[in-house]
Length: 502
Image (cartoon, rainbow, N blue to C red; front, side, top):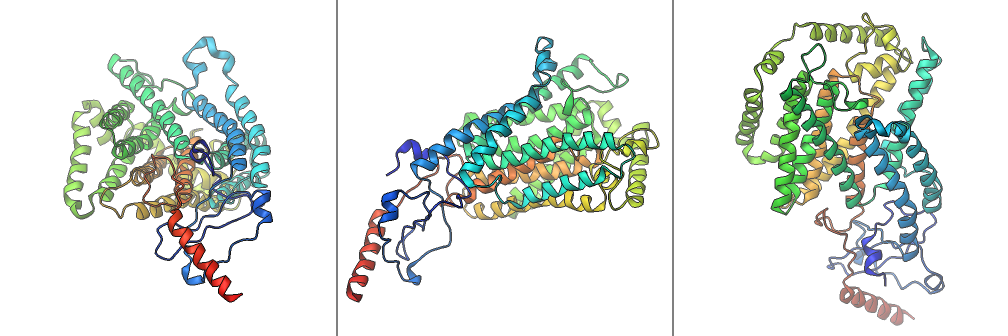
């Protein structure tokens, strides 16, 4: 009988191909289900399996992986180090402490070092546990297909060296994406990663609003610059990140049962909105509007007009409370920035049409630009640099996790009192929609934004599907309960049938 500590640890979502399977049988009216166990012990192998029940008495509607003590300890040792690497890497990517504190400049290559160490821990552990390098997930195949199209574009690039260097950077993104899918197997681990990324958004929002209030403006003295470089040096990219964090913060708030946590996440949501305003990003505002409209439509159900009106009121309130310069920027579509973006949009579509097979090479569009700038559009960026095949693969990569979340929402939204996983599924759907809309105005197709969101979505779906009890709230520990009385009755019945037959 497993101990309590073993049951609270996580189990493999995908059972090892080498693992044996023993099933508990039960009566038709029993609420418990048939559950495949982990690796069998030698005693279990030597014993004869009990007489199976008739087909009518079985229930194969769902299964739950329950590891033995040996498999649980292996997972705990191996993937604990891999998860620590993913968590540390995410911290370095989103916080970049070597930019915040000059004394930590020696950490400038730390993200690469941590990524290499994480892979060094992950690969042998994953091979030992499941006898394969990764779980066979559709999103993994799509991501590898996108990476393959990037490699194909290198020989056809105007500057192959630049294309190859960009592909190497993109390989890091895909590698961490795949490792995250395989390592994050529990609600606790997923929640910690979400909270880490959410914390980074709050810090960046506070810094952005503080800079705007104090007049610390960049970009010709008109807009703030991000607190740190990398992903967030550009205010439009920062706005895209904040748009994807707001629904996650709201989902964690709605799903929390404690009032103090609800208040905390609502404060975080408000802070993220302030940071979004400080960026003066038109694309961010459009993404925010679509995201709010989606959440309102989903949560309204029978009262869509009321919730739709509240959502519209919220958007108008954000505009009304914003500075006059922000409102004037939203109303302006003929300034130099808007004209340049429109020109690059047309140019990138033309380049994609002229190079439909392999594109012009990853990172090479700037050589075809009229003003030596990027496409400022994630979708035309993929089409122009990698070709039309990669464009459809990229769309598939965004749609696939969204469909997973949609099924998860439908499975958990039947009860009147919604579990936390329901709100988190809605929040991640809204994040993906906010990203899709806001990325229409930013060249971010090969950066971390979409791949972290997709990883969070797939991990949530896998974690929930591994639980036997579909009504189990995600923020509680998995319960491995067997109703012994019913199972014992069923086994005794099968033994009597076997005895009578003999």
